[in-house]
Length: 425
Image (cartoon, rainbow, N blue to C red; front, side):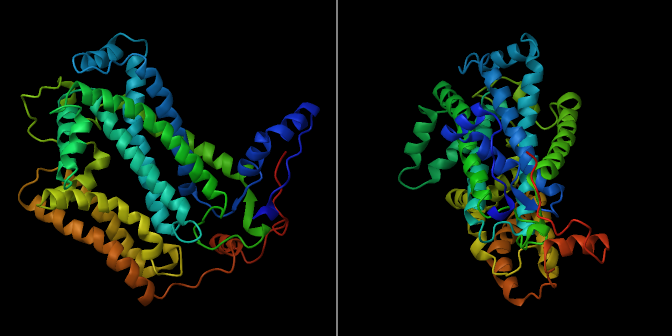
């Protein structure tokens, strides 16, 4: 794809001197200015930029909150109240950070399902995709540990329930739990460990995100048709075309984010977390944050403790095998009429699993969770491999430009479309 790029040449003598020793400007130019992107990208492709914005937002607000937070079991809850009541704009920092976690997962789930729909996990993007799964796992670990820090009732008992799951691992389970707890139960050492890791993991996420972006720039971006860029007519430079769209999408997402922060800041949390942690009183219904609920439902669907832990872990690990489980030669679900129906059933099952995870583990809720869990795994182990052999895809366009013109109802190629995309600067 290098034929689309232009060479960065600094205009000043200092710029040329610096570029010859540390070519940062040239790297930025080739990666974010002249880099060619498919001309048919939709707003679903802006969630990468939205996620980058949310990651920076979470790190910045988290650093400021850490200046006032006290990771001690006797003072953690009061330090959060101090932030909310006494620190200038502390309430805003905390609501930005707490709701920012939810917004982060809203964006990442849309990003993931867009990936599934358009087949962005297929060759040659397998490593790019697996790095994305690793980022998701790091996000889950970071979010769980952050939820424990306010040291309210749901924080304490959520930590107790989730960390106890590791005890189901044969031989080493109890040892792992004792290291996580730092003792014989969830307590002050546990809080210190979780605070330290919650502060560390976002910077690990930044490192994996850098690899994710690097891996993206090798094969280039996928697009709604799933076919590669074949000529300059199929692509446009990243700046200004993609950057303007990304900026607009980030601003719209910020408005959505602001609505939750200023109008419904506690809606996505749990009321019990405004009660100080009490090891003697168990909440009537222990639930994790909403973004963990589908996996929590899968965990509870299996009557055996070890089996539930394995199923919950497998529900995410199985994503890593999608590039090889999907046997279809066509990437985009837009050209797969039969698979499209199964895809939307899968989305509905994931939503239902999330709802079931918020319900008590009793009666028909458990039966429904088991049915949905079976379908969840069947989608990856049966539907994806089998449909690739039996489905007849729709005819693919010959080029990205042809698909754009067909969508616009045009019969010809617009003036200037034969020209190679030029970068600015």
